[in-house]
Image 1 (cartoon, rainbow, N blue to C red):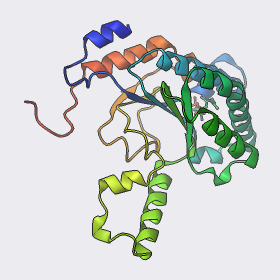
Image 2: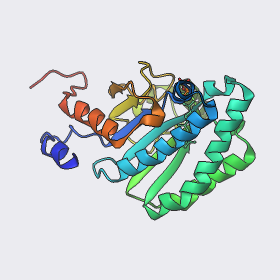
Image 3: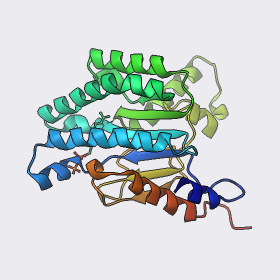
Image 4: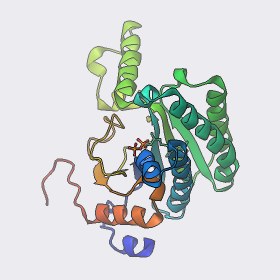
Length: 248
Ligand code: FPP
């Protein structure tokens, strides 16, 4: 499949996504369909996450993978489900850190971390530190993340610099705003995939997705397979990205 996709690449090289971001939705419905607990759905979603990282790692054109693991709005879910999700995060980070490192995968985390338990913050920082020099694939996990909150945080930082006379208001441009987002050192996503059939962004990467191609898949996240990823990539490679310009 990779070879086939590479053959279809345009001379500009825009037909294969270098950065894929995924909204992993449908764990709850997967569990309900099987009459099992929601935590089973989330834990099966964790297995799909492992499979996806491996699928991306073995498709050499993918350099960045960004995953929406826990939104800022998810804190409003019942406390036991939030606890289950936090425990899964603990479990996966501990279990996967060494494998990611052996596979030359760099792990990063973005979000508003002041709500996270101190041990989780420490774990995330340790995984980032352990994998920081890895170069094959950068996996960014959005945890306690909201795009509007991310933009507000960037605005506050810029405003503080203005109040300290470090920058002038008319120096603010798009590059400066992007540089104050938590994603400052990674490119904008080429393709956002959402599983589970809903067709919305749910406060994910709102600034960064201005020209991102969107792909909605009905498959529930725990059932997500490399074939589903290849279908999304094939759809992406057939699209013409004009970035607001006209065809030649
Ligand atoms: C959405 O499903 C998914 C989440 C809120 C959490 C995503 C978490 C995982 C994929 C597992 C954890 C992975 C790691 C690495 C920690 P939903 O509950 O909204 O599903 P529904 O729309 O069917 O109810």
